[in-house]
Image 1 (cartoon, rainbow, N blue to C red):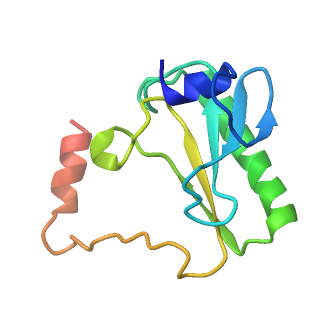
Image 2 (spheres, rainbow, N blue to C red; image 1 turned 120 degrees about the vertical axis):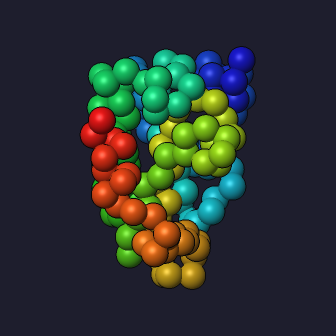
Image 3 (cartoon, rainbow, N blue to C red; image 1 turned 30 degrees about the horizontal axis):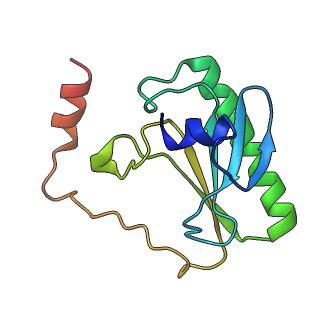
Length: 131
């Protein structure tokens, strides 16, 4: 059984800040920033590619609600909303979940995007997607 399924079933402890019949929100053990929260459906899906639309929509509604809660209680200046899909993208638990990472300043966490605009032809990418 996966880590999140164990938490959902009450086998493992967590710091739960929200729960309903379908979704839980818990503080991430890593606390990449103060208040870093995971929003997790109770039904097991490996990743965003497998989650059904109804569950996805419920999760994202909770993400929005938890952002409002954290904004009211912790006063961040912003948020990163993040989902890692598969190991190459940083997914370490094979159970769909969304990270809410409160941001207090630019130095809290570094998320870098490399500029590949000189080496990737957007028309070629678009053509491949639209085939």
